[in-house]
Structure formats: C-alpha cells, structure tokens
Image (cartoon, rainbow, N blue to C red; front, side, top):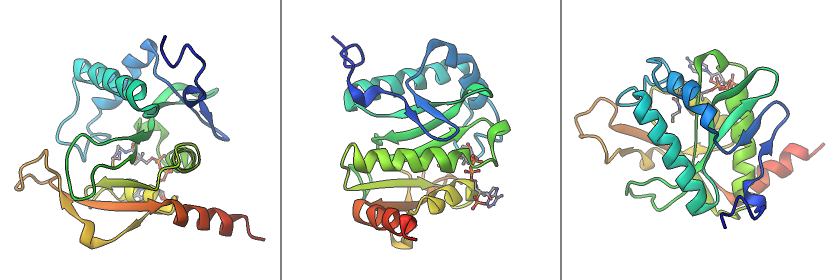
Length: 200
Ligand SMILES: CC(C)(COP(=O)(O)OP(=O)(O)OC[C@H]1O[C@@H](n2cnc3c(N)ncnc32)[C@H](O)[C@@H]1OP(=O)(O)O)[C@@H](O)C(=O)NCCC(=O)NCCS
C-alpha cells in the first residue's frame, strides 16, 4: 500500500497564511506547462519545457515524494489559483562538492511574483525540513544574475560563501548559465534565527 494511502503524515499538505503546499494532481499539468513555457520564468534555465517535458517533471517530482517522503510541493493559493507553481525540498541528481544534500527550490508563474509568496512558502518548507525531517543542512543554488531567487534565499536566512560557487555539472563550462552561487542554512543557524525572531 502506498504511503499516501496509509495516511502517512509526511504527505499532509503544508499550510501557510496564504498558501497550501500539496502533492500534485492531474489537473496541475496544463497550468504547470504554461509556467514552464514562459521565457521570463525560464530565463535562468537552459531551455523552456515542452508540455511533454513539463508532464515528465511532475512525474519525477511525484516519484521523488514516493522515494524520499518529500519533494517540490505544488503551490495552491486559495481563492486565487489552484496552481501557482512549486516550492519545496529535493535531492539533486548531480554530483558536486556539496552533494549529497537536500536543496530548497521554487518556481512560480509570473503573475504571482512580487507578492512575497515564494518567501512565505520557502520559510515554511525550510522549517519543515529542519523540524520534521531533522535535516542538518539545506542548500539552494542559482545563477548569479537570478536576484529574485537570491533575495528569497537571503530572506529565509540562507547565506553564501563565494568559495562555494560552482559550475553546474549538467552544463558545459562555456555555457552562459554554467556558473552558480550556493547558499546554505544549517539547523543550528535556523534554530537561532527562529529564537531571535520570537525574541521581544
Ligand atoms: C524566484 C521566484 C520564485 C520569486 O518569487 P516571488 O514570489 O516573486 O518572491 P518574493 O516576492 O517572495 O521575493 C522576491 C524578492 O526579490 C526581490 N526582487 C524582485 N525583483 C528583483 C530584481 N530585479 N532584483 C533584485 N531583487 C528583486 C523582491 O524585492 C523580493 O525581495 P524583498 O522581499 O527583500 O523585497 C520567482 O521570481 C520565479 O519563479 N522565478 C522563475 C523561476 C526561478 O528562477 N526559480 C529559481 C531557480 S533557483
């Protein structure tokens, strides 16, 4: 019997003030394909995705949930949209100096940008990773020019050491998107920031 059917608490939706982070549904395919076909959303990725590639990435995300008990959640914004994109945790498939690791990542449709949704969902996902999964560290990475994403990383308390910068092994060294910055957050830093946030 699948973990979902046994009522495993790891698979319950994660709720924030404005968002529901949940497992994927067949009805998410069409809106997710539109997000993955948008050149602005995919500006810092090697290519946009075809609808088939977009469906395949949902299938990979769902397989990741089944294998690891976590993954990139579908983001629902009640009273606004059933699918705004994804936010969540994932185990990168490539090897680098910081792997194996768990990364936190996000991708939202352009119409949902600039309202703090990524920061809100990412904060909840980070807390879930440290508190529920008891992870010792969570990383995130992107190309240096992706300032929106870097701001989300910084807003949730992640920090960058330039010595951690790396070239993405899936891309040729000469590729314009090869260079990446790495941000990290460890559980003790997370706990300290939680404590200081609740300090009067
Ligand atoms: C990255 C992404 C998820 C951010 O979503 P979002 O909901 O708009 O994020 P938030 O509103 O929570 O925060 C965005 C931050 O970027 C800042 N920002 C926006 N445009 C910016 C720009 N051009 N330069 C620098 N910072 C910028 C905002 O001011 C905000 O920071 P602040 O809260 O400190 O003011 C969204 O832009 C996206 O899906 N991008 C495409 C996919 C992608 O690149 N994913 C990340 C791959 S690593």
